[in-house]
Image (tube, rainbow, N blue to C red):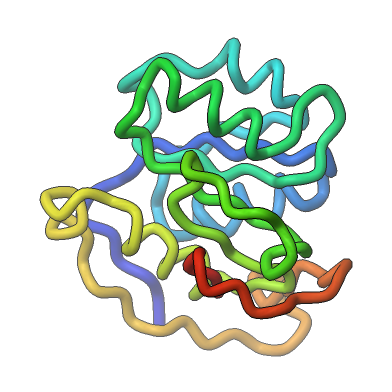
Length: 161
């Protein structure tokens, strides 16, 4: 079975660990999205132009500036820009008004899909076709689960997976 996407999204992925950023990029490209990735939050700001990306995925812990700071800088110029944070510290981070959704590590493709569905405006969500679950053999390249690096406690102020 394969995933079907009616509307390709333009997505920026920011993670200081290239292996994690490339994994996220690969998973999103599997769903047919156009993805650019960088391992630098400052480079991400230089790449970002309002309207260029439909969605931004960012890590929290990064040198230069953390994910909350990056989200705030992006939202300062594009207040309606959807931003998803992917972090091992999902339940322990203070809430940020600039982050629209948080995905905890470890995560799967289904978690990225759910985050996309939650943060996109209604008109963009309607353009996405409901995806058929993808079943892969263990060890295949898309059955990767990004490792969990911390603890996750409940945080009622933020949506997390």
